[in-house]
Image 1 (cartoon, helix red, strand yellow):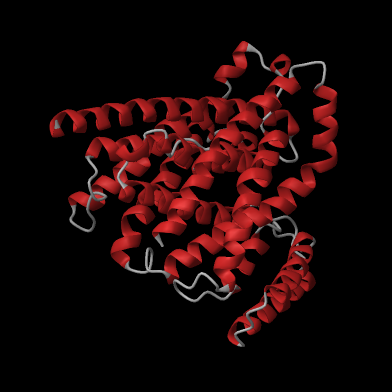
Image 2 (cartoon, one colour; image 1 turned 30 degrees about the vertical axis):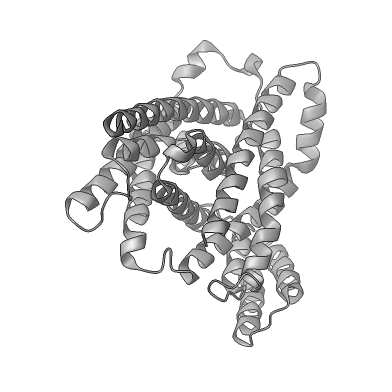
Length: 377
């Protein structure tokens, strides 16, 4: 388990660097004479990236969650409580911050879900900069919180980002899901039948009115897993998908979704309610929600601080949870997919909110680790 966790953290950390580079590249290209090339790439590939490749991302999230449950890391209430409750706070308070600023505008209010997400690759990437000084339990806390955060994003997509439903296609999707369940119950170990049915489920959901990325999660929950066995279908698929998601899918998503032209941004856009709402949600709401809910649980005696961690370290991680980036961009794009004029504001708000959270989180963690070093000297 420690080997798998170490491999996972390594992949996510290096992926964060690539994500940052691709986001910078997207903004540079969008503000250069080559902007038309990037726009052509976006026009031809955005659907397949946001609807197709992101389903593979959510498949990986589902596999990680199921493995964590089967291997015991998230199988007991005491293990789930702290990151789970902190994740709830980290989704609820940012959404309320956004709503408080946009409550009187039905159009911009649609973006309430944008600041609820945490980008696990970026957050773990920043945390990894502190090397061996970071307690393993603190890394596990952030990883578990981000996974729960992604589950929350999945539920938001399922319940709030559906178009007109086709009940016939929903029935067809249910048949695909039931067949996947039967394969699991029959203990079919070959991955190919699951993947073929998963593709069928994706196409069925695509036209049913439910966002097709949900197919990835449903598929993940039916893939057989055998506890700590590295040869189980779940482990094999997860290990195969990790490099593709970390080094291809998420960077492609950043390239297609992070860029915006500064020519379309005026000074008064900095005070736009969409921008302010997202910044407030990511930078203020996330830290208040995660730290507030986690500290309340600890003070009440239902959980304890991650092993070898301090309150300041926990607060630093709470700040890092405000790095929304890829998931915030994804939810923001879904919120305003029929109102493209708001997408530049979404990207500006996500960029500023994530930068503020990452910079202050890094400073707090640096001071916390320095303080501990002085005490142990």
